[in-house]
Length: 439
Image (cartoon, rainbow, N blue to C red):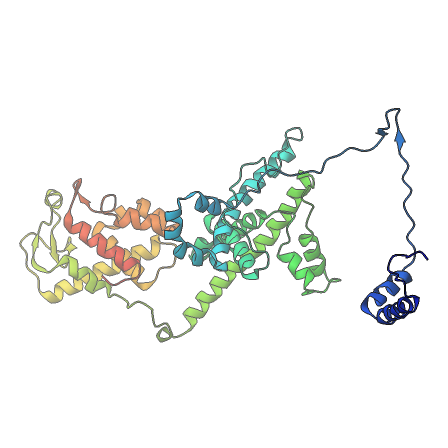
Protein backbone atom coordinates (compact mmCIF):
# COMPACT_ATOMS: atom_id res chain seq x y z
CA UNK A 1 0.00 0.00 0.00
CA UNK A 2 1.58 3.27 -1.05
CA UNK A 3 2.36 5.95 1.56
CA UNK A 4 1.24 9.47 0.69
CA UNK A 5 2.70 12.65 2.24
CA UNK A 6 1.62 12.89 5.85
CA UNK A 7 0.30 9.30 5.97
CA UNK A 8 1.54 6.38 8.00
CA UNK A 9 0.96 2.64 7.86
CA UNK A 10 -1.79 2.99 10.46
CA UNK A 11 -4.96 4.35 8.73
CA UNK A 12 -6.84 4.66 12.01
CA UNK A 13 -4.15 6.91 13.45
CA UNK A 14 -4.06 8.97 10.24
CA UNK A 15 -7.83 9.48 10.31
CA UNK A 16 -7.84 10.46 13.96
CA UNK A 17 -5.03 13.00 13.34
CA UNK A 18 -6.93 14.52 10.41
CA UNK A 19 -10.03 15.01 12.53
CA UNK A 20 -7.94 16.78 15.17
CA UNK A 21 -6.50 19.19 12.60
CA UNK A 22 -9.99 20.01 11.30
CA UNK A 23 -11.27 20.62 14.80
CA UNK A 24 -8.36 23.00 15.56
CA UNK A 25 -8.88 24.94 12.31
CA UNK A 26 -12.59 25.56 12.80
CA UNK A 27 -13.29 29.03 14.30
CA UNK A 28 -9.60 29.88 14.36
CA UNK A 29 -8.12 33.22 13.19
CA UNK A 30 -6.95 31.63 9.96
CA UNK A 31 -10.44 30.26 9.40
CA UNK A 32 -11.86 33.78 9.75
CA UNK A 33 -9.31 35.18 7.28
CA UNK A 34 -10.07 32.51 4.72
CA UNK A 35 -13.80 33.11 5.02
CA UNK A 36 -13.29 36.85 4.50
CA UNK A 37 -11.22 36.31 1.38
CA UNK A 38 -13.78 33.87 0.02
CA UNK A 39 -16.56 36.47 0.50
CA UNK A 40 -14.85 39.09 -1.68
CA UNK A 41 -16.04 39.42 -5.31
CA UNK A 42 -13.76 37.93 -7.88
CA UNK A 43 -11.42 40.47 -9.53
CA UNK A 44 -11.19 40.32 -13.27
CA UNK A 45 -7.68 40.10 -14.46
CA UNK A 46 -6.74 43.05 -16.72
CA UNK A 47 -6.24 42.28 -20.37
CA UNK A 48 -2.95 43.56 -21.62
CA UNK A 49 -2.43 43.76 -25.34
CA UNK A 50 0.97 44.70 -26.62
CA UNK A 51 2.10 45.13 -30.17
CA UNK A 52 5.51 43.60 -30.56
CA UNK A 53 7.90 43.84 -33.44
CA UNK A 54 9.80 41.00 -35.11
CA UNK A 55 12.31 41.01 -32.31
CA UNK A 56 9.66 40.64 -29.59
CA UNK A 57 10.08 44.20 -28.32
CA UNK A 58 6.79 46.01 -27.44
CA UNK A 59 5.94 48.92 -29.72
CA UNK A 60 3.96 52.14 -28.94
CA UNK A 61 4.72 51.76 -25.24
CA UNK A 62 4.97 55.21 -23.65
CA UNK A 63 8.43 55.72 -22.26
CA UNK A 64 8.65 58.45 -19.64
CA UNK A 65 10.63 59.31 -16.59
CA UNK A 66 9.23 60.94 -13.50
CA UNK A 67 9.75 64.68 -13.21
CA UNK A 68 12.29 65.24 -10.48
CA UNK A 69 12.94 68.79 -9.27
CA UNK A 70 16.63 68.91 -8.48
CA UNK A 71 16.57 72.62 -7.62
CA UNK A 72 16.76 73.35 -3.94
CA UNK A 73 13.89 75.47 -2.63
CA UNK A 74 15.10 78.99 -1.88
CA UNK A 75 15.07 79.65 1.83
CA UNK A 76 14.38 83.03 3.47
CA UNK A 77 17.27 85.51 3.43
CA UNK A 78 17.90 85.63 7.18
CA UNK A 79 17.92 81.82 7.35
CA UNK A 80 20.47 81.62 4.53
CA UNK A 81 22.66 84.21 6.22
CA UNK A 82 22.46 82.31 9.48
CA UNK A 83 23.33 78.99 7.82
CA UNK A 84 26.26 80.60 5.99
CA UNK A 85 27.76 81.87 9.24
CA UNK A 86 30.46 79.79 10.97
CA UNK A 87 29.19 77.39 13.61
CA UNK A 88 30.71 79.36 16.53
CA UNK A 89 28.87 82.47 15.34
CA UNK A 90 25.60 80.52 15.04
CA UNK A 91 25.94 79.23 18.59
CA UNK A 92 26.74 82.71 19.88
CA UNK A 93 23.78 84.51 18.30
CA UNK A 94 21.13 81.78 18.59
CA UNK A 95 20.04 82.71 22.16
CA UNK A 96 19.42 86.27 20.97
CA UNK A 97 18.04 85.73 17.48
CA UNK A 98 15.73 82.77 18.08
CA UNK A 99 13.39 84.39 20.66
CA UNK A 100 13.44 87.59 18.64
CA UNK A 101 12.23 86.12 15.36
CA UNK A 102 9.91 83.57 16.98
CA UNK A 103 7.82 86.53 18.12
CA UNK A 104 4.90 86.92 15.65
CA UNK A 105 4.81 90.70 16.18
CA UNK A 106 8.51 91.14 15.41
CA UNK A 107 8.45 88.78 12.44
CA UNK A 108 5.29 90.43 11.12
CA UNK A 109 6.86 93.89 11.34
CA UNK A 110 10.05 92.66 9.67
CA UNK A 111 8.22 91.06 6.74
CA UNK A 112 5.73 93.93 6.52
CA UNK A 113 8.54 96.44 5.98
CA UNK A 114 9.88 94.36 3.09
CA UNK A 115 6.34 93.95 1.73
CA UNK A 116 6.00 97.73 1.59
CA UNK A 117 9.03 98.01 -0.68
CA UNK A 118 7.96 95.04 -2.80
CA UNK A 119 4.46 96.47 -3.06
CA UNK A 120 5.78 99.71 -4.54
CA UNK A 121 8.00 97.76 -6.94
CA UNK A 122 5.04 95.57 -7.91
CA UNK A 123 3.03 98.66 -8.87
CA UNK A 124 5.87 99.60 -11.21
CA UNK A 125 5.74 96.11 -12.76
CA UNK A 126 2.01 96.36 -13.44
CA UNK A 127 2.44 99.80 -15.00
CA UNK A 128 5.27 98.52 -17.20
CA UNK A 129 3.27 95.48 -18.31
CA UNK A 130 0.26 97.67 -19.10
CA UNK A 131 2.27 100.14 -21.17
CA UNK A 132 4.49 97.58 -22.90
CA UNK A 133 2.47 94.50 -23.96
CA UNK A 134 5.48 93.11 -25.82
CA UNK A 135 7.83 93.46 -22.84
CA UNK A 136 6.11 91.61 -20.01
CA UNK A 137 7.75 90.76 -16.69
CA UNK A 138 6.69 88.09 -14.22
CA UNK A 139 6.88 88.68 -10.50
CA UNK A 140 10.01 86.52 -10.30
CA UNK A 141 11.73 88.47 -13.07
CA UNK A 142 10.98 91.90 -11.60
CA UNK A 143 13.20 93.60 -9.03
CA UNK A 144 12.14 92.71 -5.49
CA UNK A 145 13.44 92.16 -1.96
CA UNK A 146 13.74 88.44 -1.15
CA UNK A 147 11.65 86.88 1.60
CA UNK A 148 13.37 87.77 4.87
CA UNK A 149 11.71 85.24 7.19
CA UNK A 150 9.58 82.14 6.76
CA UNK A 151 5.95 83.11 7.10
CA UNK A 152 3.65 81.24 9.45
CA UNK A 153 0.25 80.97 7.70
CA UNK A 154 -1.39 79.75 10.92
CA UNK A 155 -0.44 82.89 12.89
CA UNK A 156 -3.23 85.47 12.74
CA UNK A 157 -1.16 87.92 14.78
CA UNK A 158 1.73 87.74 12.35
CA UNK A 159 -0.55 88.27 9.36
CA UNK A 160 -2.34 91.26 10.88
CA UNK A 161 0.90 92.92 12.01
CA UNK A 162 2.46 92.25 8.63
CA UNK A 163 -0.36 93.94 6.76
CA UNK A 164 -0.53 96.90 9.15
CA UNK A 165 3.24 97.40 8.92
CA UNK A 166 3.13 97.39 5.14
CA UNK A 167 0.33 99.98 5.11
CA UNK A 168 1.76 102.24 7.84
CA UNK A 169 5.28 102.14 6.38
CA UNK A 170 4.10 103.72 3.14
CA UNK A 171 1.46 105.90 4.81
CA UNK A 172 4.02 107.36 7.22
CA UNK A 173 6.70 107.61 4.54
CA UNK A 174 4.38 109.74 2.42
CA UNK A 175 3.74 112.07 5.37
CA UNK A 176 0.23 110.88 6.23
CA UNK A 177 0.89 110.41 9.92
CA UNK A 178 3.04 113.53 10.17
CA UNK A 179 0.41 115.83 8.68
CA UNK A 180 -2.26 114.19 10.81
CA UNK A 181 -0.46 115.27 13.99
CA UNK A 182 -0.10 118.92 12.97
CA UNK A 183 -2.58 121.72 12.64
CA UNK A 184 -2.96 124.42 10.01
CA UNK A 185 -4.11 124.06 6.42
CA UNK A 186 -6.72 121.43 7.31
CA UNK A 187 -7.93 120.92 3.72
CA UNK A 188 -4.42 120.38 2.38
CA UNK A 189 -3.52 118.04 5.24
CA UNK A 190 -6.70 116.02 4.71
CA UNK A 191 -5.82 115.61 1.03
CA UNK A 192 -2.27 114.51 1.96
CA UNK A 193 -3.63 111.97 4.44
CA UNK A 194 -6.08 110.54 1.90
CA UNK A 195 -3.43 110.45 -0.83
CA UNK A 196 -0.94 108.70 1.46
CA UNK A 197 -3.58 106.18 2.53
CA UNK A 198 -4.64 105.51 -1.05
CA UNK A 199 -1.11 104.92 -2.33
CA UNK A 200 -0.31 102.74 0.69
CA UNK A 201 -3.34 100.53 0.02
CA UNK A 202 -2.52 100.37 -3.68
CA UNK A 203 0.78 98.66 -2.82
CA UNK A 204 -1.05 95.47 -1.78
CA UNK A 205 -1.18 92.72 -4.41
CA UNK A 206 -4.44 92.86 -6.41
CA UNK A 207 -4.87 89.09 -6.07
CA UNK A 208 -4.99 89.38 -2.28
CA UNK A 209 -8.02 90.17 -0.16
CA UNK A 210 -8.40 93.63 1.37
CA UNK A 211 -10.49 95.25 4.08
CA UNK A 212 -13.52 95.45 1.80
CA UNK A 213 -13.21 91.70 1.20
CA UNK A 214 -13.20 91.10 4.96
CA UNK A 215 -16.24 93.34 5.47
CA UNK A 216 -18.07 91.50 2.72
CA UNK A 217 -17.18 88.03 4.06
CA UNK A 218 -18.22 88.90 7.63
CA UNK A 219 -21.56 90.31 6.41
CA UNK A 220 -20.94 93.54 8.30
CA UNK A 221 -23.09 95.45 5.81
CA UNK A 222 -26.29 94.59 3.97
CA UNK A 223 -25.46 93.08 0.57
CA UNK A 224 -28.52 94.77 -0.99
CA UNK A 225 -27.52 98.23 0.24
CA UNK A 226 -25.38 100.70 -1.70
CA UNK A 227 -22.57 100.28 0.85
CA UNK A 228 -22.76 96.51 0.45
CA UNK A 229 -22.53 96.80 -3.33
CA UNK A 230 -19.56 99.16 -2.95
CA UNK A 231 -17.64 96.82 -0.61
CA UNK A 232 -18.33 93.89 -2.93
CA UNK A 233 -17.00 95.90 -5.89
CA UNK A 234 -13.92 97.10 -4.00
CA UNK A 235 -13.15 93.73 -2.42
CA UNK A 236 -13.33 91.47 -5.46
CA UNK A 237 -9.74 90.20 -5.98
CA UNK A 238 -8.28 89.41 -9.39
CA UNK A 239 -6.35 86.34 -10.49
CA UNK A 240 -2.59 86.27 -10.09
CA UNK A 241 -2.19 85.89 -13.86
CA UNK A 242 -4.78 88.54 -14.73
CA UNK A 243 -3.91 91.11 -17.43
CA UNK A 244 -1.91 94.12 -16.26
CA UNK A 245 -4.77 96.56 -16.92
CA UNK A 246 -7.11 94.47 -14.79
CA UNK A 247 -4.55 94.41 -11.98
CA UNK A 248 -4.13 98.19 -12.24
CA UNK A 249 -7.90 98.60 -12.06
CA UNK A 250 -7.90 96.65 -8.79
CA UNK A 251 -5.10 98.87 -7.48
CA UNK A 252 -7.19 101.93 -8.29
CA UNK A 253 -9.99 100.40 -6.22
CA UNK A 254 -7.49 99.99 -3.39
CA UNK A 255 -6.67 103.70 -3.70
CA UNK A 256 -10.30 104.54 -2.90
CA UNK A 257 -10.28 102.18 0.09
CA UNK A 258 -6.94 103.53 1.37
CA UNK A 259 -8.10 107.13 0.98
CA UNK A 260 -10.98 106.30 3.32
CA UNK A 261 -8.50 104.88 5.83
CA UNK A 262 -6.34 108.01 5.55
CA UNK A 263 -9.40 110.16 6.16
CA UNK A 264 -10.30 108.04 9.20
CA UNK A 265 -6.77 108.34 10.65
CA UNK A 266 -6.88 112.12 10.37
CA UNK A 267 -10.37 112.26 11.83
CA UNK A 268 -9.40 110.04 14.77
CA UNK A 269 -6.38 112.19 15.64
CA UNK A 270 -8.42 115.38 15.34
CA UNK A 271 -11.03 113.85 17.66
CA UNK A 272 -8.33 113.00 20.19
CA UNK A 273 -7.06 116.58 20.03
CA UNK A 274 -10.55 117.93 20.59
CA UNK A 275 -11.10 115.62 23.55
CA UNK A 276 -7.75 116.64 25.03
CA UNK A 277 -8.59 120.31 24.69
CA UNK A 278 -12.02 119.76 26.22
CA UNK A 279 -10.72 117.96 29.30
CA UNK A 280 -9.15 119.64 32.31
CA UNK A 281 -5.39 119.96 32.06
CA UNK A 282 -4.96 118.09 35.35
CA UNK A 283 -6.05 114.86 33.64
CA UNK A 284 -2.92 114.81 31.51
CA UNK A 285 -0.34 113.95 34.11
CA UNK A 286 2.56 114.13 31.67
CA UNK A 287 1.66 117.57 30.35
CA UNK A 288 4.83 119.68 30.48
CA UNK A 289 4.91 122.65 32.80
CA UNK A 290 4.35 125.92 31.00
CA UNK A 291 7.31 128.29 30.95
CA UNK A 292 6.70 131.97 31.71
CA UNK A 293 7.92 133.91 28.67
CA UNK A 294 9.15 136.91 30.66
CA UNK A 295 11.13 134.76 33.09
CA UNK A 296 12.66 132.82 30.20
CA UNK A 297 13.79 136.01 28.42
CA UNK A 298 15.13 137.51 31.64
CA UNK A 299 17.40 134.49 32.15
CA UNK A 300 19.30 135.42 28.98
CA UNK A 301 19.00 139.18 28.76
CA UNK A 302 20.08 140.02 32.27
CA UNK A 303 19.32 143.42 33.81
CA UNK A 304 21.15 146.70 33.32
CA UNK A 305 19.76 150.00 34.57
CA UNK A 306 21.87 152.14 32.26
CA UNK A 307 21.75 152.47 28.50
CA UNK A 308 24.59 150.75 26.56
CA UNK A 309 25.59 149.39 23.16
CA UNK A 310 25.22 145.58 23.18
CA UNK A 311 27.30 145.05 20.01
CA UNK A 312 29.51 147.02 17.66
CA UNK A 313 26.78 146.82 15.06
CA UNK A 314 24.28 148.41 17.41
CA UNK A 315 26.85 151.07 18.27
CA UNK A 316 27.19 151.96 14.60
CA UNK A 317 23.41 152.27 14.44
CA UNK A 318 23.25 154.16 17.76
CA UNK A 319 20.87 151.46 19.04
CA UNK A 320 20.93 151.58 22.83
CA UNK A 321 19.95 148.63 25.02
CA UNK A 322 18.63 148.96 28.57
CA UNK A 323 16.83 146.94 31.24
CA UNK A 324 16.04 143.37 30.06
CA UNK A 325 17.21 143.75 26.47
CA UNK A 326 14.85 146.57 25.49
CA UNK A 327 16.12 148.80 22.69
CA UNK A 328 15.28 152.30 21.49
CA UNK A 329 14.03 153.41 24.90
CA UNK A 330 16.80 155.63 26.25
CA UNK A 331 20.04 157.30 25.21
CA UNK A 332 23.47 155.84 25.98
CA UNK A 333 24.31 156.34 29.67
CA UNK A 334 20.74 157.13 30.67
CA UNK A 335 19.50 155.32 33.79
CA UNK A 336 16.12 153.69 34.50
CA UNK A 337 14.45 151.99 37.47
CA UNK A 338 13.72 148.27 37.70
CA UNK A 339 10.01 149.03 37.48
CA UNK A 340 10.64 150.82 34.18
CA UNK A 341 12.70 147.87 32.95
CA UNK A 342 9.84 145.48 33.77
CA UNK A 343 7.37 147.71 31.96
CA UNK A 344 9.61 147.92 28.87
CA UNK A 345 10.01 144.13 28.89
CA UNK A 346 6.25 143.48 29.01
CA UNK A 347 5.66 145.97 26.20
CA UNK A 348 8.39 144.39 24.05
CA UNK A 349 7.01 140.88 24.72
CA UNK A 350 3.53 142.07 23.69
CA UNK A 351 4.97 143.36 20.40
CA UNK A 352 6.76 140.03 19.78
CA UNK A 353 3.62 138.04 20.62
CA UNK A 354 1.56 140.15 18.22
CA UNK A 355 4.13 139.50 15.49
CA UNK A 356 4.04 135.75 16.15
CA UNK A 357 0.23 135.72 16.09
CA UNK A 358 0.18 137.51 12.73
CA UNK A 359 3.04 135.62 11.04
CA UNK A 360 2.56 132.05 12.29
CA UNK A 361 -0.39 130.20 10.74
CA UNK A 362 -0.17 126.91 12.67
CA UNK A 363 -1.32 126.33 16.23
CA UNK A 364 1.42 126.25 18.86
CA UNK A 365 1.51 124.89 22.37
CA UNK A 366 2.20 127.47 25.12
CA UNK A 367 5.85 126.41 25.37
CA UNK A 368 6.28 126.44 21.59
CA UNK A 369 4.87 129.96 21.45
CA UNK A 370 7.11 131.12 24.30
CA UNK A 371 10.16 129.81 22.43
CA UNK A 372 9.15 131.56 19.19
CA UNK A 373 8.33 134.80 21.03
CA UNK A 374 11.75 134.72 22.70
CA UNK A 375 13.33 134.20 19.27
CA UNK A 376 11.42 137.13 17.71
CA UNK A 377 12.16 139.29 20.78
CA UNK A 378 15.88 138.64 20.20
CA UNK A 379 16.27 138.76 16.40
CA UNK A 380 13.49 141.19 15.51
CA UNK A 381 10.24 140.82 13.59
CA UNK A 382 11.80 141.67 10.21
CA UNK A 383 14.45 138.95 10.35
CA UNK A 384 11.89 136.37 11.40
CA UNK A 385 9.34 137.40 8.75
CA UNK A 386 11.73 136.74 5.87
CA UNK A 387 13.30 133.57 7.25
CA UNK A 388 13.25 129.97 6.01
CA UNK A 389 12.40 129.01 9.58
CA UNK A 390 9.01 130.75 9.39
CA UNK A 391 8.26 129.15 6.02
CA UNK A 392 8.97 125.68 7.43
CA UNK A 393 6.90 126.40 10.55
CA UNK A 394 3.86 127.45 8.54
CA UNK A 395 4.16 124.27 6.44
CA UNK A 396 4.04 122.21 9.62
CA UNK A 397 7.60 121.00 9.03
CA UNK A 398 8.74 121.22 12.64
CA UNK A 399 12.05 119.42 12.08
CA UNK A 400 13.17 121.94 9.44
CA UNK A 401 11.97 124.85 11.57
CA UNK A 402 13.97 123.68 14.58
CA UNK A 403 17.06 123.33 12.41
CA UNK A 404 16.69 126.69 10.65
CA UNK A 405 15.89 128.55 13.87
CA UNK A 406 17.91 126.89 16.62
CA UNK A 407 20.78 124.97 15.00
CA UNK A 408 24.20 125.87 16.39
CA UNK A 409 25.60 126.50 12.90
CA UNK A 410 22.81 127.62 10.57
CA UNK A 411 20.31 128.96 13.12
CA UNK A 412 20.06 132.53 14.41
CA UNK A 413 23.42 132.36 16.19
CA UNK A 414 25.45 134.99 14.34
CA UNK A 415 26.10 138.68 14.90
CA UNK A 416 28.07 140.58 12.25
CA UNK A 417 28.75 137.26 10.51
CA UNK A 418 30.27 135.57 13.55
CA UNK A 419 28.81 132.81 15.71
CA UNK A 420 28.39 133.98 19.31
CA UNK A 421 28.45 131.47 22.16
CA UNK A 422 25.75 133.41 23.99
CA UNK A 423 23.38 133.10 21.04
CA UNK A 424 24.19 129.39 20.63
CA UNK A 425 23.31 128.85 24.28
CA UNK A 426 20.06 130.82 23.96
CA UNK A 427 18.99 128.98 20.79
CA UNK A 428 19.67 125.66 22.50
CA UNK A 429 17.42 126.64 25.41
CA UNK A 430 14.69 127.85 23.02
CA UNK A 431 14.92 124.56 21.13
CA UNK A 432 14.47 122.59 24.37
CA UNK A 433 11.49 124.74 25.31
CA UNK A 434 9.94 124.42 21.84
CA UNK A 435 10.24 120.61 21.89
CA UNK A 436 8.31 120.37 25.13
CA UNK A 437 10.89 120.68 27.86
CA UNK A 438 11.67 123.43 30.33
CA UNK A 439 14.93 125.27 29.71
